[in-house]
Amino acid sequence: MTDLNRRQFTKLIFAAPAILAAGRRVFAGTDAGFRFLVVGDSLVWGQGLEEKDKFYTLTRNWLATEAFGAPFDVDLKVKAHSGATLTLHKNEEDALSRAGKRETDKYDPEINVGFPSILRQLQVARDEYTAVGIALSDVRLIMLSGGITDISVASILNPFGDNRQLESDIERYCLKDMSIVLSRASELFPNAITAVIGYYPMISPKTSAHELFNFTLEAYGFPRPLKPIANNALTRQFFKVIKKRSLKRSRIWIEGSERNLRGAIERLNKETGSTRAVYVKAPINESNTFGTGNGLLFEMVKKGRINDHFYDERKERCGPVLNDLKNTTGLRYPIRFCDMAAVGHPASEGSRAFMESIKAALEPHLATLANQTNR
Image (cartoon, rainbow, N blue to C red; front, side, top):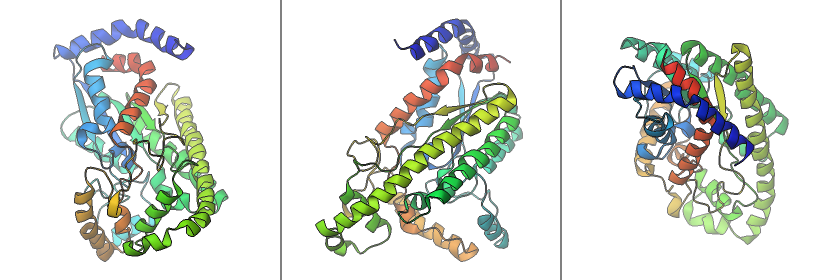
């Protein structure tokens, strides 16, 4: 048993009476229950996954059946959706305002638009809880992921991008804007611990250059019959140079996002004098990310299809929704990017791996969660 596991084991032993007592009270029907809120972008939403396989569902099941040593009533509310940014960007705010649209207008959560922002998701959840008489102090756990859509995957992997600008953008969103979101979550839900889900490398040296090049051609609408001509041994040599630059930016992103997300968490915990947020390190790394053939992430298969559960439905809906947005607001979201949005997201095996990381991050705090449930 490692030192970390010993410490966790000791904490759980001492916390067991409180946890079991809380669990028995809930089982007896004398407690309001454990309220669990999910906000954020496509990672925490579980892009392309069936509900049963999303890691927030797996977390909810763990809390309800195992975590506290007895059956626990866990109420789950999900406001996360694909494409959500931390705060509403000025260009989107202006475009929605001109069109007479609201940030809170609802869209299919599989379609990657930036709004409602994560900050707004928290506020919407607050309004929904209070509308039915639920005390905001009853929310015990918040799970969120955010920051990557504020920059965009395409921008991060852009081989011709400015690396210093990328570092600056990461600090702006993953530290400054995330701090705003975490602070607001802490204010709105005073008893909640927020689990911030970390991101993972997009590509690695093990990523197939052929597969990456093929995906790039497909994403940007290169005619499919001409792809074998474009993606040949000669062009792949050139693309290896491009891939090397993109790999460097992927590493800047993953190192910078983790450092700054942790910084935002540390800032909140220091300001509040307690553990109000924890970091969940992604279980996916350069050895098992996109294009490495490991099966943890959704991939592109034949004829540009993505092997997730909602590809056909998403492909049918993306065009009408995004064209309507373009026509009414002037906002342009690439339709093909929307069709292919699940690629690189955790598949069911990857989601289960994330669940194990979430458990490891929350287990040291189960006593706190149980005590909060007794308040």
